[in-house]
Length: 184
Image 1 (cartoon, rainbow, N blue to C red):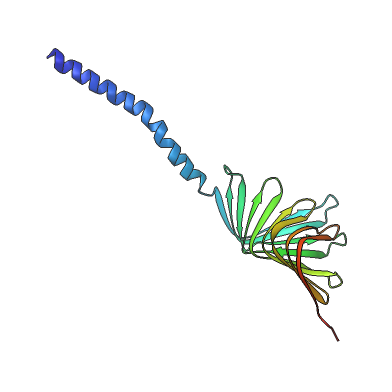
Image 2: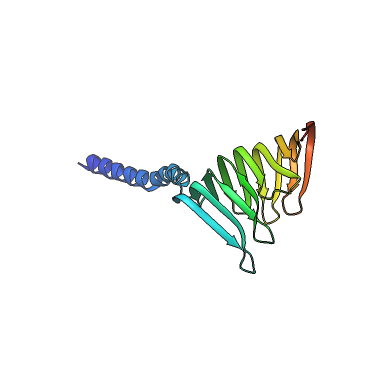
């Protein structure tokens, strides 16, 4: 009888120890799975940012966004970013298939990235690439991928770009070809 009582006590102690330590090991994979789920999802969203004088500075719209608070970023599908000039007119429009917005005010645009001037008199009319980083509030553009720059009467092919949409400076890191188009 004593041996049976000792075995039961050992079995209960072992079970209690197992249950005490095992749930913490099981919780880690569940926590990781929760991190991969968005905190919220929104459809057809638009965010407007105003400057200190109350004028529209930029807008961001997307067909869908998913916000991941624990991972520290927001994903967009079909994002469109519009930057306004000092006269409160749309100046540049950036779009892509997907984007990731990080809290350090950096957006990574991916797949069919287009930066299009909304002003007719700009020398550079559009920039096309497959991936591009936009940094705010400087509105800098950075990448190391193939780039096509379309301007008035020309286009340039190359790889890598450092540009600033506010100061209108554009630097192509590697030039491949420039084609001038004869306009009548």
